[in-house]
Length: 66
Image (cartoon, rainbow, N blue to C red):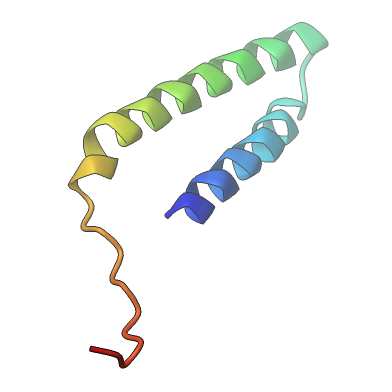
């Protein structure tokens, strides 16, 4: 799960500026980037506070020892 969290942060860090930079002026691109980043942060926070605690713990690998 930790790997998924880090990958999602990295993806958002790369995708938000790429999408925001298309077309329009620099001011509009910065505005879109800020709005997208704030939205991502809020949704990420909601996920960590409400969804992440409800997920089942990862299964421990069976080592064959008793």
